[in-house]
Length: 291
Image (cartoon, rainbow, N blue to C red; front, side, top):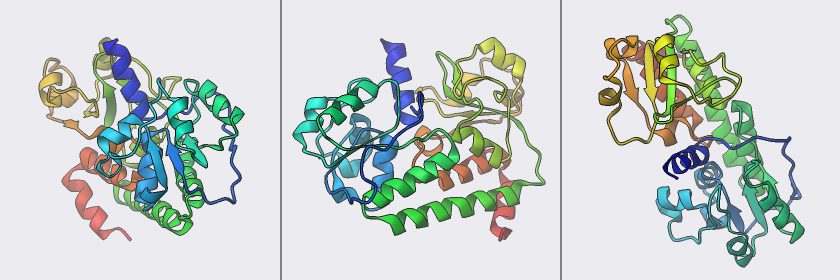
């Protein structure tokens, strides 16, 4: 149960876009007034676009983490969505990310005539499209466009600032036990690349692979970016394996999971955090001078 709870939190905090291509089941021209958000990233987008008053219900994780929605009714989470709670709120839109876990839940909502909008968040561009699409449905298209434009500007500035800097061999740890890391094909992997990292897990065939400690020791990363929620400080935990170059050189850095791995409205902050983590003082001056 403990392992499933950790993996469940990981899925909620990161990305659950798997399975067939997503579909929108809501008319794109309608502005939604009573919205239920089933995913933390979508709740965060709505709040960033100043659409708090449109939300009538949120997932349990958002209710715990976002102070501004703590008084709202909760409707469960990835593994325990409550159809009854959603129906009782009489929403004119339910927003979800496409996932195998909630496929049956979506079908039941549709059967009751409740509009559902599925917004994928697997890769970087998909997250930006989700911000724009949700912004349009919430009646906040200009705010969404401004947010996306700022993310794109930051990505360009980061790429310009780090283009001549070394690209350290890096692993981004999502969870320590069992050990999950960022592999290829996700928005986090794209941000690692944009921030100037050589992702040592980039050869796997899944976006968030479970790996062994033996693999990590052999991969010999020069930087460990630890985004796990484990309470033990990252430096103390990884100090058990001093043969890892990142440990030996003091380049183990803890980062907030919500900042770096949430596919939400602040990818620009995540890019800056990753770039500073990877390049330190070498990064700050080039950024200030970037156009």
